[in-house]
Every structure is written in C-alpha cells, then in structure tokens.
Amino acid sequence: MKLKLIILPLILFLSFGQTFAQYPQVETKLDKKIKTFLEENASNWTDMNVPLSDGKIIYDIIIKNGYTNAVEIGTSTGHSAIWIAWALSKTGGKLITIEIDKNRYIQAKANFKKAGVSKYIDVRLADAHELVPQLEGKYDFVFSDADKYWYKNYFIAMEPKLKVGGCFVGHNVGMRANGIRDFLDYIENAENFATTFDKNSRAGMSISYKLSEK
Image (cartoon, rainbow, N blue to C red; front, side, top):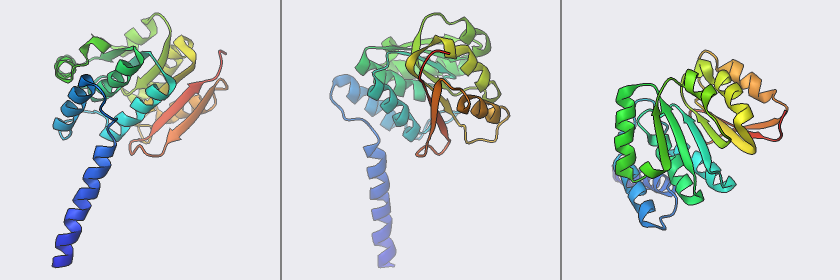
C-alpha cells in the first residue's frame, strides 16, 4: 500500500513536469498571458482542437524557420491558432485562419482576445474549399486541420502560394479517414517537397518543406 502511495505522486509529478516543459520559456508579458490562458484552459480544448504537444510542435517549426506569413485551414475554437500566433508574435508575423462553423468562429475570436493574440490573427468565417484558392499573396507556413478528404486539394491550392523554404503541415494524418492516403501519396511523391512525419504527435503530423518551384 505504501508503495502505491509513493508511486502515484511520482507519476503525477512526472506527468506535470512533461506538460510544463512543453510550454516555451516566458520572456514577456504577452508570453505570460498566453501561457496562463493555455494552462487555465488545458482541459477545455475539445471540438477538434489539437493537443498541447502538437501546438508546441507547430510553434517550434515557426520559430526555428522565422516564418511570418501563415495560413490555418480549420480554426475550430482556436487552440492551434493561439500557438501559431504566439510564435508569430516572436517573428513579427500574422496568421489567416479559416473556420466554416459560426459558433466555433465566435468562440475562437473570444479565445484570441482572452489570450491576448487578436492582433496577430485575421480570423475568417468562410468555406475553405472556396476561400483557400482565392487567397492572394505568398505564405511560408500552412497548417491544415480541416476536412481530411480535402487535404490534397488544399495542398494543391496552396503549393504555388508557398514560398521556397516554406512548410505545409497536415494534422491527423495518422487517421484512417477518407482522402488521407491520397494526400500522403501526393506529398510524398512531390519532387519539390521534402516530407517527414513527427513521431511525437499522437494524431500524426506530416511536415512538408518546399525545396523549389516546380
């Protein structure tokens, strides 16, 4: 019985330590505000949001590469967008994020305000099938976390708008969802992209860097 009482706190301590370590170092007032908001809402991110670990992965990709022009396809209620915006607050960038559901869109806007990242996010209520092909300009980071059967189409639409050196990340690619296999076959055979898969993501994340124009 004593052994169980000792082991349980140890497990809880290690779990807490792993979770705590996943957050970036706090250096500014904004860092503190974002981190506090994420910690206070850590158990509330349902409704198709990414887990904390995956948020940190995309944060690190943006920071490492100094990306400034990002697009997110599928906002949900804003968890991943907050991580992206947090990174962009460091690089001086901005995110366009697209959500089709009005209730999730409204909740996401409220969450962005509470987290203090609204100025880094242009959130749009729209059908990504229509809006993504219409986006103008060049981007260096794309995060796709919407309807899986349309991933390949999103990639094809964004590929010419993605700068060389830019990155397209697909979320939930470990799912056996309709269209995922077609998407993976396409990106793995795209000669001007180098694709890897993050082993630390339970949901599965494809990370494709653009090496050159076609």
